[in-house]
Each structure stands twice: as C-alpha cells, then as structure tokens.
Image 1 (cartoon, one colour):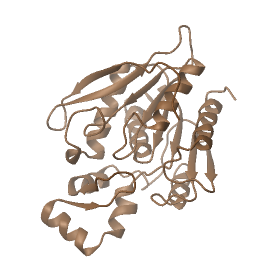
Image 2 (image 1 turned 60 degrees about the vertical axis):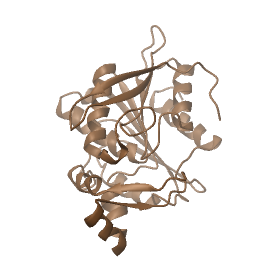
Image 3 (image 1 turned 180 degrees about the vertical axis):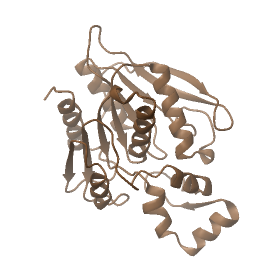
Amino acid sequence: MSASFPAAPLSHIDVYGGGAPRRIAMHILPAAEGGALPSLVWFGGYRSDMTGTKAIELESHAAAIGAGCVRFDYSGHGASGGDFSDGTISRWLEESLAVLDHVAVRRMLFVGSSMGAWIALRTIAELRKRGEGGRIAGLVLIAPAPDFTIDLIEPNLSETERRSLAERGYFEEPSEYSPQPNIFTRALIEDGRENQVLSGVIETGCPVHILQGMADPDVPYAHALKLMEHLPSDDVVMTLIRDGDHRLSRPQDIAKLKEAVSAMLGLA
C-alpha cells in the first residue's frame, strides 16, 4: 500500500545525552492552516523504521484530515545515526523526548507499534512528570509490547543464549522479517528492568485504543490483555483481530488503525 500524498521533508536533530551524540532523522508534516487537531506522533517498533507501511499510512491519514504528523527513527534505526547495538529503552526514550521538544506542538496523539508502545507509555510518564500530561490527547497502540524484554525474552532464554549474554554481551536469533538476525544485548535487557511499566498502575490521563492480532506469533494477545489490566483509570478500548499477525499492515488492518485514530479525534 502506498500513500498518494507528498511526504513531509526529511530533517534532523542531534541528541547528545546518554553517551555518544547521534543524529535523529524525522519527517514533520505541519497541520493544515487553521487546523486545531492534535498532531499524530509515530513510535516505531524494534528494528522498524519510519518508512514502514503503518507509519506512511498514518502520515497520509494526517494529511487527509488536516492534522500534523511526526515520524522519526530511533538511533540505530532507518535514517538515523548511531549504532543499533548501543540501543536501550532509556536511550530511545531520550531521543523521543528530544524530538517532541524540538517539534513543540501543543497537543499530540501518540501511535505506538510493538516496542513503540512501550516507549510511548514511558514518554507519557516523563511528560506527566514535567507537568505536560495535558499535551496528550490520546494513545493508539498496535500489538503493544511493553516490558517485552522482561516478560517475553528473559523467561524464554535458552542456556546457550544466557551463556552468550554473559560471555559476549548479546545473543542473536533468526528474524521472520529480515535476513539479518535480531540482536538482543545485555544492556537492553538490563535497561528494560529500569523502564518496567507493567509493575503497577499505568496512568496516561488520556483515552487508549489497543489493536491486537490474535494470531500474533511475537506478542501473544494475552500480553495486550495484561496491559489493559494495568490501565484501570483510563478509558481503554481493545480491538482483537482474529486473524491478525504482529505487523497488522494489511489493508484491513490499516483501515482499523485509521478508524481508531479518527474516533479518538472525534471525527468518526
């Protein structure tokens, strides 16, 4: 599926904290003149980038309704600088906050896919600490994978993988989505424990819509149900897609994503 609108131009910011500086790539679509809708902000998944189908279609939808849209790549992903093996949740969170500080839009609707849902939740927590929680108009999560290093990786490590983490600082596993293997580092796993969100009540202060495939081989739908249990004070809607996989990038899945965003913006 390809979008039929002129994509926002590529721009960059430099982020200096948390070790070596890295250049973060962004596509920033401004809102239509006079538009009052919140800007859509895309948080991509692990090893995904802002040129994926869902991200492009989100920007296309923003253009169609007159909303702004922000897409960006974490360090080590896509068009951004930095080494992927240096990546941690804390590092990518810092970059996400830097992008939002740079864009400085008044109201935002976050859309987080897989690991991006975790980073979106952590970003909201940090904004609320700053007293900026009112900037978040809503949250749409696609196959959300908060705490995936803790709940989905660590309990299932083989002895070989544990030994590789101890001796080499990382382990590899085949990827269904790339000829290159997935690499999980000891730093990522240890940092994941410091960013755990499924250990207590999560308060976003905004409506939440979760889209989850029941045929997802990577993030079981029980994980999305667990997340929902940790959002007792929020208005949460969950859409379970019986034959949906982890990507949820089929035309019918994209249609559900756009419907969820429009409904949250009061357009449906």
